[in-house]
Image (cartoon, rainbow, N blue to C red; front, top):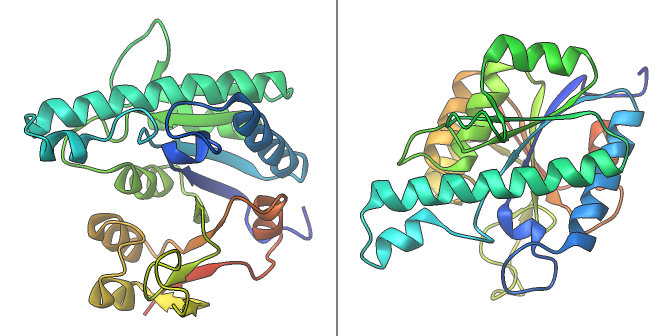
Amino acid sequence: MSDLRFRRILLKLSGEALMGDGPFGICTDTVARIAGEVQAVKDSGVELAVVIGGGNIFRGVKGAASGMDRTSADYMGMLATVMNALALQDAFENAGLNTRVMSGIEMPRVAEPFIRRRAMRHLEKGRVVVFAAGTGNPFFTTDTAAALRAAEINADVVLKATKVDGIYDADPVTHPNATRFDRLTYTEVLHRDLRVMDGTAISLCRENHMPIIVFSLKQPGNVVRVARGETIGTIITVD
């Protein structure tokens, strides 16, 4: 534990992270690789919780944009995160990790209800906790759920794993000359409208002095490197 920068981590994974190279759905090889990353973090002595998105199956905002009722679309998106959480649980347990799925929407046959004290106890016992169904409410993203759960479990940091190696001033895929930031403040992210996370999530982290590190999940070992304090990606911290 002496070389670890963080004792308790909230890892935010997008649903798209589970797709691999596919256009949608869940790639079992990719999920197994993520499980290996999580196992390496756990083996280093870190307490770890995960918030998973559902965009690889259904995204509520896109559903609403297509004419669906926003509340119904968001609930569908939350159910998609439960499917992803169960896929992660299976992969984590195959890797030898003791895992619990906790849902913001009660569905006792497949997941425990989210109860803060129970989640804390799971972490203290060395279990990986996967938080599903977002906050359990429509109109909130899984980024906001990550910030909320991180504050509730007294995490030291939110790690947002993405497809790119940090935050840029423009999309690096479509803008090859985009500039990457090593460090930003919460205010700079909001004023620049960088949209790496939604404004509610950024504001919640700012109010709770919760640092956010945005980094690439594609590079093997990056989660452990971040946990050990190596400078990777972009850190968002106090003003």
